[in-house]
Amino acid sequence: MGRILDGINGPKDVKKLTLSQLEQLAGEIRSEMIATVARTGGHIAPNLGVVELTLALHFTFDSPKDKFIWDVGHQCYVHKLLTGRREKFDSLRQYGGISGFPKREESPHDAFNTGHSSTSISAAVGMALAREKRGEKYEVVAIIGDGALTGGMAFEALNHAGHLGIDLIVILNDNEMSIASNVGALSSYLSRLRTDPMYFKGKEEFETLLRKVPHIGPRVVKVAERVKDSLKYLVVPGMLFEELGFTYLGPIDGHNIAAMNSVFKRAKSIRGPVLIHVITKKGKGYRPAEENPDTFHGIGPFDIRTGSPIRKNGPPSYTSVFGNTLVQLAREDERIIGITAAMPNGTGLDIFAKEFPARFYDVGIAEQHAVTLAAGMAVEGFKPVVAIYSTFLQRAYDQILHDVCLQNLPVVFAIDRAGIVGEDGETHQGLFDFSYLRSIPNMTVMAPKDENELRHMLATAITFDGPIALRYPRGSGTGVRLDQEVKPLPVGKAEVLREGQHIVILAIGRPVYDALAAAEELASLGIEAGVINCRFVKPLDEELIKAVARKVKRIVTVEEHVLAGGFGSAVLELLARERINDREVLCLGIPDEFVPQGKADILRAKYGLTAEGIKKAILSRFPVQVSYHKTARGQA
Ligand SMILES: Cc1ncc(C[n+]2csc(CCOP(=O)(O)OP(=O)(O)O)c2C)c(N)n1
Ligand SMILES: CC(=O)[C@@H](O)[C@H](O)COP(=O)(O)O
Ligand SMILES: [Mg+2]
Image 1 (cartoon, helix red, strand yellow):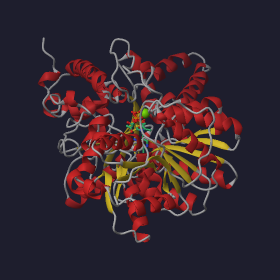
Image 2: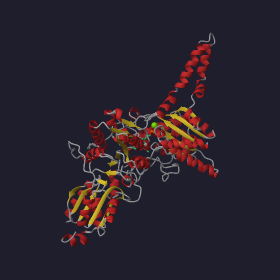
Image 3: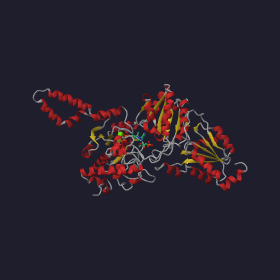
Image 4: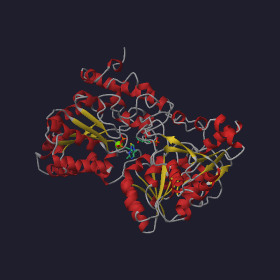
């Protein structure tokens, strides 16, 4: 018998199915997703948890007329399989393939692009307001996880929606997990709603009282037993949401399609904002993911049979070198505090948390709060290390400026996933941090060429008295030997790696070794290129750069970052300020566009951020015949 999934070309095909066919389809979707993600990598556990929920949504609502807004968007694979993208599904997250997140440019069924957390309710309120203004009729449905609900924006939007009293449906997908276990008072509140202590306490007291009534008591208890669901709805109100102006429905079983179909139908008939609390299991239906939902939240290729990741043996990641070095430094310095916004494992702070649980804070998906919390602790003499991915730190720009830098507070920003991150694509590339940080007074910004230098930069940051950031890439380090002693570096000093009279390459961060390799290849063509590992974007090693720029006519800057406002811009500003105007400068980096998804190696090659790319760009800008041989004898 063929698969039902093969006949699903859009939501209308879902609507034709019986309940038992929908249940069979749920199983087929799980197998399809596991088979694909085991090969491509991706967010498998969140998607396994929303199979029935997504089927019920497409069964009850009418996409694309009705709009679904997936918060974060990492759980949209089932939706994609049901909305005409089944045949392209094997290209998931690959260069040129379908995205792992909703993309309006991919399908009319993707109503709003997401990737960063906690935006869905705001977007839904905006779309509902637009609908009202145009006098149109359709449903707007935001689907948000319990983790994403810890983000401040979600509350700002709930607050506004309740005030407007606008027709809107929020589906809270509660699986008790963020990437790691969910944290916070709200999470505890949801857990109380789930386990219903009020209901059970009320019911037990009620039953005990009844049983005491002679003769009729026990019989009445039996009747009450039968009406327990209505009793439950009476006593368990979801008061927090009700008080915010929402009608609260739930909690309901997010793996029971029939139950969801009927509650969704009911929600459509209610005026004003409705919140439906759905309980799901992250990783549902695949044992390794159910047992380790955090590992399977977002995972690389894995062996389906065992669930073991297929890892090539490589050097330790920058993340783990950061985590271990922080532990080492924290043993010597009690002021050090570790702060994460819901990414303990992703940032390596889990290593710190294990050894120093009382000095570690997971604040939920709340980057803005994390930064100002750090400012508060720094004011009181602590040394907070805020570890946040480059792309998510964008959220906290004003907190960095207003709360940390304006007061010149010694907060350390450990910025992971800086540069090209790969398959997550546009929303997650960490390509803007030099620009958004170096423009802020008092801020110091560093980028290590390898994981060994990262350790010394972390020590530099810990001993530094002011705001300081170090940014490093996703994935394995270079495998260099780690120095035994971790020592602070002189602030604002670069490192000369190679001398050369024809060209000087000023590089920073990960591309430094590519610049060196390019210089070696150029040498075989008779072109002598010097290479400087600049280490600091701010302050630049101005004396050194000015000195080489006065000697060498051709200057190349290399960074894995957007060119606008980045490291190359900083060098150009310096040259202009110092009136070193007659130099030829070539800035290599990311042009003014968003970098798509794909393997990091493919993307680096596309943007010329490889040894080969750097060599080619130099040869194309400064062709061998024209420039070098003419000048090699005299001034280069
Ligand atoms: C602003 C921001 N910070 C951090 C993240 C990283 N992140 C992606 S999903 C996630 C957890 C989301 O939990 P939840 O909403 O409950 O979804 P689940 O995976 O449990 O289905 C986090 C922290 C992000 N995408 N955006
Ligand atoms: C959806 C999301 O934002 C995270 O799950 C992110 O994909 C994690 O990225 P890393 O795999 O780099 O930790
Ligand atoms: Mg969750």
